[in-house]
Length: 458
Image 1 (cartoon, one colour):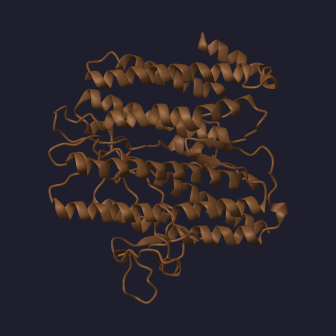
Image 2: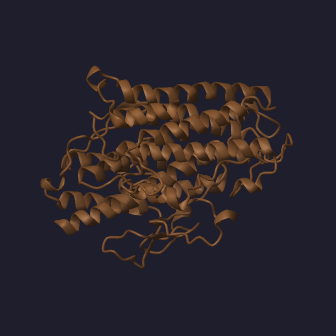
Image 3: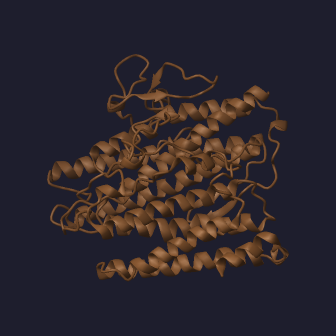
């Protein structure tokens, strides 16, 4: 049983990497979409763009939900949370050139890309079930994802090399559409083979009842673990769902179909801004755009650390756990990450009105990746120290305090001012919730950490 549990832990860590990478590339694509009609996107066409934005944002939220459920499964079998992933830039940025990049668990064509037909085709393939599942459940078959060989395994656009690590060694086969489904099928089989005793940590499980359409339930045994797997594959690939169910695969398929129709009617139709994928701040000549780019990357790292700290040694009676939960899901994602993304997408990288826009790299340093892979490591970051999070929030607040006074367009300065107020409150709330708690029984959690926190705030 120990061997089965070890295999399950490896696959769950790979699933965590995949879910986080999908979340980030989808967000990147979403915010490349235009925020209003223009010369190459009429008012009627922009109605489609607006709907695509909304639907893809819902998918991104559900990827966050999937990432969280994978952490719950890891915790349930006595493992640490896992938030490491490979960097998504296509080449290492100049400051880390020569740094060895580890292989992704599953080599999808996952990279930072703006919205266009090829990007959506790739997302259809990424989320597609296997050929057999598509046929069995009467799903629309993306024929461009499959070759004509009898096994229907290889994606025409780009083969997805499998790193499903069942035995500690990478297999040789390549698999295409259906890769995520196959990964979770292995996870499901391993869960079913485990005894109930393998779920050694049924208590102190994180739970998000309903927050911005994110629902994370506790995994306390085999039944709830299987329910988590079924929810992930149903929402993503539409496995075991009606052909009318709005899975991620179905949503991307419908977006692609509508995009093709609009392009046929108007070949000049451009739903996304002129865009340039950059790999580091050094590639952005405009200082104001560069500042927002840097700030967004820093805010993302703060969110990743908060999530890792929230899931590491989570306890419903812990002042730190409650504090991080109140910071992570809504405030950081909705009031910091999303607004910064929206601001960055409005700022040309060269400062010219018609210049190309860009998005963040979500770059992680080796030290950040180390602690996200193993939260018990305290060499660079101590995720059990409230001061780590307060310090990062204070730095974000100070950066926003400066930027809101810079010579940005008026609409951007208003948004920066609003964000500054949100981060100011978030920073103060970290201190208040940690020292006083949300419930009366948490009010006594002061301790030595609180003393050092108060000293820091002074």
